[in-house]
Length: 111
Image (cartoon, rainbow, N blue to C red):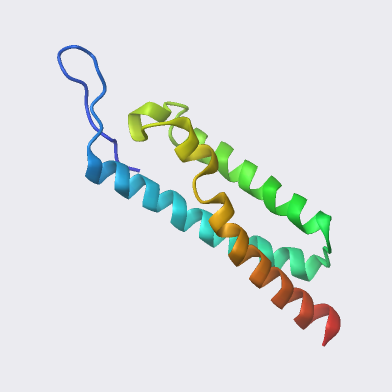
């Protein structure tokens, strides 16, 4: 992750748009990748119904904690708000999760 910017003489953090965009793009890519992998794992393990969705949101919570640790819990150095790192891309990744979850479940348990 690239730093979003330095500090000015007034110690006000300056956020550079290019770095912020790059950091948000990295979060979206990592969440999409985790959604696909966790969907395949949930399908292979045979999760159905609410259990699969709970599994997905647990994975996303672990991903958020991992991103916080990666940024050394200094979110405003890399992002403009906490919501970027905690919830950015969670619902977008849900579609990929369901797609790969049902696909893997069908392959392993039905066919």
